[in-house]
Structure formats: C-alpha cells, structure tokens
Image 1 (cartoon, rainbow, N blue to C red):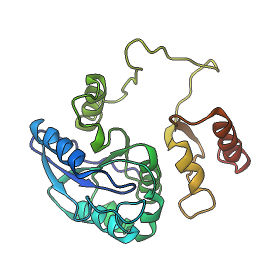
Image 2: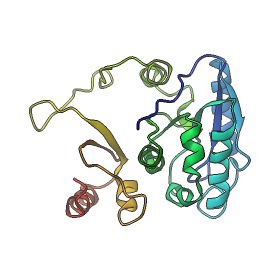
Image 3: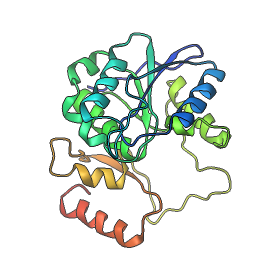
Length: 231
C-alpha cells in the first residue's frame, strides 16, 4: 500500500533533525531563519545540535528525534540538517507502525537516501529525493526551490522532471520506461546490502546520485550492486 503525505502549505510546521553527520549550529540557525522567512514554522529536534564522534548524537538519540517529529501533530514535513554518515544506524530504533500511521513529507539526499527508501519499503510512505536543511540558504539556485516546493505542495501528476537550465539531458540508451523510483546515494545503497534494510529495486527505476567520487569507486560500487542482484 502506497501512502501520500499531506501537502505543505504556507504556515505549516517543519521538523528539523540531524540523522547523520553533525552540522554547525550557526548554519542550522541561518537555514532555520530562512525557512521561517519563507512562511513556515519550525520545530527543532532535541539533539539537532549534538555531536558524538563523527555523528550527530547516538543512534538512539537521532532515531528518537525522528520519531518525535512523526508523532508531533503540528509537523507536516521533516528535514535532516545534512547527510554525511550515520543514517543506517537509526533504522533499528524506528517504530514503523507509528510512522505508517502518521505520514509526513520526508525529504533529503546523500546519506539520508537510505532512510527514504526504508520508510517506503516498510510503511509505503512516499518520500522525496529533495532538499536538506543545509540547502535553505541564499546561495541555493531558485530552480531548486521552485522544483522542491512544487513537488511537496501539490498532487500534480504526471510531473515532468527537467534538468536545470543549460544542462542537457544525456541518454545512453534510447526509449521510455515506466515504474516506481527507488535509489539515491550510491554509497549509502551499497552500505545497505546484506542488512534488513537492503534496498528493494525489483520492478523499479533505480535512481543514483553520487558527488565527487572517482570513476574507479563508481565502477566498483556498480559492479557490487550488479553482482548482488540489485541492478
């Protein structure tokens, strides 16, 4: 069963969590101010500023913040401050029955990808490969904001996804394909293999994003996915 979250409207509340690597407080505060200036209310997780080694608080603390946002009736959308490392660790501490009963918009990319896929696989909740809190800064291209707000504030379907201006779309294989989308960050997807949270790509379009990785690493990861039967 597929569940659509409610749409986001001006005046709604956004819950902020840090699910992976820590993010400096001054950057969090700047982005929160920008969100408020755009007409949204903001609630911060208890451990949003935390740091435990290379991650933002313990696995249990980060998972607790996420669960708090799902049970908070005010919250319509949940944003992690950033990606990085650590999202896989929160997954065993989530209550997927509660999440299924409280659908929210959940957006992100990078290491947050694994959370998005697992929420869909375990609860049927449609999630969004979209902006993180760190993107709500003045330097983010207006194109990104327009695409994001269109996606989370309407049920428009079908919706054409276009590249940013002046960036051509390249296709190595001609033709069309229809299906549900799974995927996200390549590194995070490979990390999930062999766990209870392994990505399910059967009958789906596999979407991959990776940034600043050498071609040798991409080649190795793609082969790993192929041999594991994921693609």
